[in-house]
Amino acid sequence: MAITRREAFTLAGAGLAAAAAGSMATPAAAQSTDGAMTFVQVNMWDRGPDVMAAFDMSNRIMLGTPGAALKDDPGAPMGFDVTQNVIPRGKVKFIATNTSTYLEHEMLVFPISDVTKALPYNTDTERLDEDAAGSLGEIAETAPGETGTLELTLEPGVYMLACNIANHYAMGMWTLIVVI
Image (cartoon, rainbow, N blue to C red; front, side):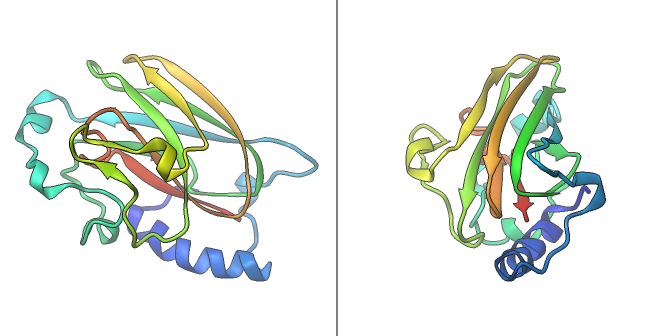
């Protein structure tokens, strides 16, 4: 089930409450039983050097940045597309393909306790502080056209997938998933 970033934020709030109450059903396409693994395809993309060069870095598109949480920015120079944003708790295998023609990308997974709060970000390096933000794992730098995988066991909650190469996160290269 693929949803927009705006829908993910709405679902994140409702999903956490419902998951805590045990009342949210698992989408049929994502069901996992008896230790089965859920597979999530991720495309890591960018719009090329011209769009990236024109991006105004004063308009960062980061979690917790005013306005960023409420829009799907069609002008974002880079991002993630996932096959499903709502998955069942348990074993998850992320299969991430870098669809860029010239840039490396990576994918880290962070637990999110509050979608309105910014994660620790170092403006000197233009990167998230992976340790302070609680990174659960990553698919390291992946060359254009290459694919990497990451297996995790996730509990109910909201998680962010983000590229933490300098400036990529700030340019909108992140998405949310909800585990129920």
